[in-house]
Image (cartoon, rainbow, N blue to C red; front, side, top):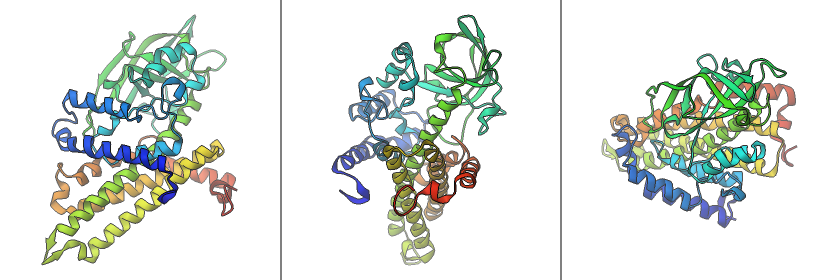
Length: 398
């Protein structure tokens, strides 16, 4: 075994991804920043193709559907490396919803999930609303059964990657019927009549993928588009949240590593008052604190991924995913802030990696549940179960 308990195959996957990021993606960061997040179409297509050839895309999906069948730990290793690149260039590695094959019908797998695994189709999620962000249960969108159809109504915002997707997961509360007020999730093709793009606001980061505001105006979809059963919608969202929270933690680790490397190299070369600035204690301490933040975040994230692979209880997974996202995203924000300071005026230039990460990492404390929501989850479970049950003890998971 190599450091941090990586097998030789783990290390090979990690290094394969690292080379792809270093050699193919990072060289296009500044070009993307200067062109609204876009790079030449042929280059983007080549990145998507290479990610698939390297076995990275659909790494989370079952092998029988054409996915990579990676363990959660190996998915973390890949996501960590993807986190080292800015401008969402790493989004060429697509991971469709891993929870879907177990609950979708054969027809749904054939029409939506299978093509997503093969890279032929792409999804987006319409969940958040003006009055329902972290409080998903506050959504006001409705789904009403009408014979062999459901009629979907509501306004959704922050629909990430709407412009690159061709189908939507739409979450609503059921209106009428046995499960009135419960959540349901639906497949909605983007060209379905009644799906209307209101606008695509600009955000702090410079990404090619937009985050749309959508109207669903009496959108009729076949009852066969319902995912699972009526009332199951929130369980799928929770599973997606757990996965995304862990992968956010992994990507934050990658961003921190890149920032520490870049800031250290600069501090060793930058001379002020006759000496490299790394010799000034203030700079040295910022780098030391940043490396410590990275180390702690990585250990937490790796341990959690291994625990999920080992089959720890889903409620324990839920709270640990919250802790990992909380700690790693907050740590990454601190590291980015220090890196900007170390680079000085250069750190405030958009061509500098520290400036881009300073903007990009900020959202990791917001999406898929704010830091405050993660703290609420952790505190609630601590009160109910106690620290030893949530964390385990020296002899194991306790």
